[in-house]
Image (tube, rainbow, N blue to C red; front, side, top):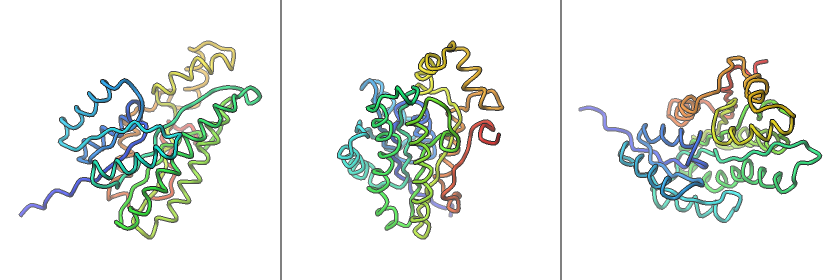
Length: 264
């Protein structure tokens, strides 16, 4: 008799209504996993995306619009994921924001928000899901970091600090989960042309006193020897592998996918 199909895993991807997060959600759904979407955007567009994923791949797809700067909403998101999907096996911490400004004029409220969303929210989602993953003997935690978890750039103090923090959090959680079948890895993309990157182009142009075209050519892609943006599909494929059974021995790693940027 042919082997029965494996049971689907249950995946929460934060910040998954657009960009990298949506790409990962689509890929995991295509692999047969149930999905909890999270993020902001027009309600009708989010519902259309949710319904299309469910229809296309025959999996459960739910949505929760929790604001991840608020720990109580994160707690409700984790509970909602367990209730609607039946569990939480794969956690992808992707939600993030950016602000570009010289350190002396960096708004403190922007610092607080970036640290809350880009770093602290990952701590909260992990702490709230880790015990169940350990008890189940399986868990995949994937933190979407950045090349800025490995190197720095000017005018991005909060973002670079948060992503370096994600790198340390990833390694610590990997050590705590290693004996329990729970892996934790970080993906460190170079520049991907997402809405987050598109929004920072004019800010970077203003901070550096150059044109937006020069930002793309001389700032963003100058860092990547390939001179190409990393694609969302490439990041999603790597995330899907790290979520798979075959990645059981990969943990605590910072996976650069940056066109050679951090090799220099």
